[in-house]
Image (tube, rainbow, N blue to C red; front, side):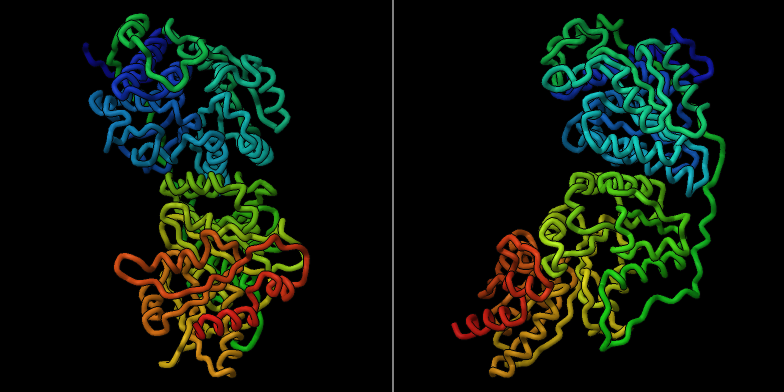
Length: 621
């Protein structure tokens, strides 16, 4: 086979049809080499990809960090053989690397990840590409002020995901005419036909209702695809959805439009390659973008002061968070804030007063909020996504995928635990520490004091990966000075004596309960060490081990369910030759109702009297 490199401007419709066939053949070959994969889902979208690459995408594959590059997100990430075949066609990877698909150590993973420099985000959990694309497009229109386009290739099965419709509405309201969704309507999902089959108008009606421009086409008609993409680029004031009727497994009689062929290599790949016209080795030059730079980021006002709180007062950590965020917005003009329509309660809204152009209202759409934060992170913005901690459970899969994407975003959940009081269990985050600790590479912080909150929020801004800060609703005493340091991975020993018999460990609201319990205990002649474990992940292993050696007994107190929270973080410091102390776990074991904060703490058994009682029992044993 001879290799030719063809400028995109010179490619005819016939050439593009040939390129589409090459992408199909290479998708079949990649899956055959792996013995697994999704060639049929790749084959349906091959013509769409060919036209996009050759005539509409502006991208410099030698400079994937070029700020003027378009963004291509493969939301139907299982069709990765198509994406990798496209990378081969543009010369970004070799044929040899293509055939390492799904092999140990290969960059050609089963679903795309940013191990490849041309992949912005990991996909494969369906319904996430378009929401993230909205964040990228918002960055282009409102932050970067650059003309790049965001193209998202979606599957029809994922149109059943509610997150997709959160994205359609968000993009429509924002009028993101730099965003194009290409929907590969191949009629067949994993186990059979999709909900709407080939009823393109069923999709178009719904999408138009969200303020989008829609185009319905034959997804194997090169001229129609080209015209639709041209229309998308010319449309002003609205995003475009290209709804393309395709055939799954196009061109191979063994699999074309047949059920039961999803997610499997072809039984006879050689026969299919013959039907598709054999192997080709076409190379194309994707059009590079015009040189452009994003709007300058000047670094902010260095004279801005961070909040300082006088000891002896009483301030909610959510308030300290909002005031710190507003100040950081003046110090760093790359910070953006996304709100889940509770900014007046989380106090994130304080940021909007001086930095409204960097404040994004996502309304009650937590999945879209996290996705948009990830999309803005793709463009180098430091994103804070904020809502009630309980509602972050809706977006857990987006956070999980953000970790796979190597995203660096900051997440703040307020109104944590039973201490919120009368609102009751629907508003209480009692699972969030477990959820966030379980995500790969996260940082999990839980301050008890406003000055501590200032330091931890500031630390989050430059920390890689996903950082989570848990904040409380009610006011609490200011126990630390503005100059105290709180390094991530540290803790604070608030009470200590050589004769300590037990260690009380808390975080957030339970720190204050533990201090009160220690005062009660010392009156009884029992000395208790008190540790504020504000860094839940990473945890201060050395301080915990020292306390275990000194006292031999722990009472661990958390405003959280017992599974996966503070106590589990503490006990993971032991083992591997480090004997665990005798310990009691106090946590929320029952289903709360409505009551005052003090009543809630008492009912859950995590108030000062309950802590003191548990410590006495443990110390006496």
